[in-house]
Image (cartoon, rainbow, N blue to C red; front, side, top):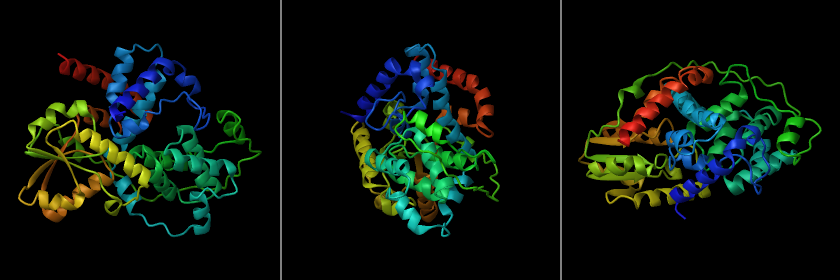
Amino acid sequence: MSFLLEAQNVWDNFVKYKINDYAKLRNFDFGPNNEGSVSKLSPFITHRILLEYDLINDTKSKYKVKNPNKFIEEIFWRVYWKGWMENRPQVWQNFISEKIFDFDHELYESAINGNTELDFFNSWVLELKQHNYLHNHTRMWFASTWIFNLGLPWQLGAKFFFKYLFDGDAASNLLSWRWVGGLQTKGKQYLFSSSNLRKFSNNRFNVEKINNKQIFLEESNQFPLEDEIYKNTMDPKSDNLILFENDLHVATFKKLLSSYKKVYIILLKNEQRQIKLSESVLKFKQEMVSEFAENFNNVEQIDSHSLEDKFKNINQIDIIYPGVGENYDFIIKFKTLNNKHIFNLVRDEDLFAWKFAKKGFFKFKENIPKINQKLFENYSKNNS
């Protein structure tokens, strides 16, 4: 089954049978082999097989769900996280460049191999490696245990998630770890109790007490707001286009890609990555890239090493903006070393939503009606 068809089936099943109980049941993790109330759409959304805004529009108009508010709010959290980091790209740069040496290396090895004294944590490590997925509530328990119980650096935990998650989105993963640790919302840590674990794991984990250490994370860096991203549009500016595996929305690109002489898609291998990915995650990404390329006559997947040769005599290149993270770091390095002019193509919906993500989520939430109106206008225009 194709990824697009699988994604659509998962979405249809969720919106027909689960979404009405989503607000009530979403925090329960019944285990990897049991049906839960969450959508499990995140691997498709992260790579934009499904577009966030399409899900919002479908929920409100196509399916006419009675009470979609909590689900739509969670989708908007993903939009907010992206926007927050686009407004502060230095957060990613600090994370990726920081060297961590002072920690218990033996405990770290035990943690990543699921050999700690905490059976519930060990089971999550095994689940993550086997399924490349964890329930969102379990991710919070995992991160809290990693930071406040095991006392390991949060940055190493975030990188561990990046390595194994199919939906390892740069913004959502990084900023969620910061939030658990008390860095994202200053001083507000996420700590959980044994009763919370028992209830929302459906009694799978019965622990007498969660032993948290008194750990208070601090950072001295200030992250100034940047506005360079808002100078971009989706208008083509050259004859050649580059895109990456984290934006594979076929419907968006059907018309756009046909206007280019040549389109190249790149999937970075581990030797080009600052955070190494597991073989299962790389395979998952490669299969999506191959399927996407089959939809277009002028799309060619190329190895990142051949990029310099392909563009030897071409100075101006468009890219589908991949967002702050590994892919954009790679293309900026290529641009600098080869003296190229790179033009970012950024969706109008993203730019509009991100400008409201300069402060906390509740400030962003106040502007969701404006974003929804913008989406409605865009869909009306595109379908007229």
